[in-house]
Amino acid sequence: MNISPHEAEESLEAIRKITQKTRRSIASSGAYIFLIITGIIWMVGYVATQFLSGSIVVYIWVGTSILGSIIATLVGSRNDRRVRSSATPVYVKRIITFWIFLVFFCIATIAVAQPTDGKQIAMFIVLFTMIGQFAMGLPLSFSSTWWAIPIAALALIGYFFFPDFFYLWMGILVGGGMIALGFYIRFRW
Image 1 (cartoon, one colour):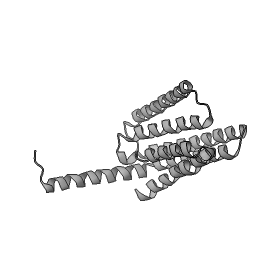
Image 2: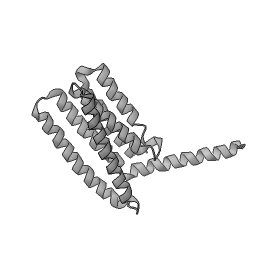
Image 3: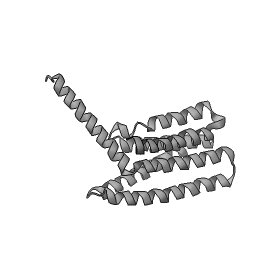
Image 4: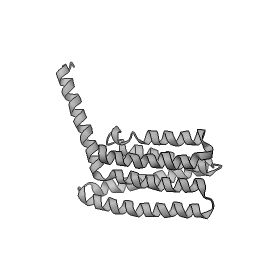
């Protein structure tokens, strides 16, 4: 099958338009808000872990996670009304099921690997979270998943090369990176 240069150009233009439409759909869906919320939780939690100790760190993580979950639920239910289709409940159930199983496998992996410190546990959680983000976005388009790779890479760089500042690194670069990405998606896509 031979394709003329004009046909190839038309096909590439169609792909570009679909990619742009997908990006705009993601940006207008409010998905960026979840990145910002997660980034804030990670920033506050990891910076607190770097500088504080004891049960206060647990309270900060639990408190920010609960508050973030409440905000995400409210935002998600508000956005759900705007983008509702007959297939929405099915997709929501599949997404929830996916994340429940991913959390289960993360916990199982941590139990089997028996990490020796909190940094290793944090890396497992971050890597599983990025795998989940990548898997959730991949059916849509690579443009909605690419960011999981640099976030995971930043986390690994901090873990291996800056262990004394790992939690600060995670808070500022990984949490802050997710916040910046959320704003980038919102305003540049």
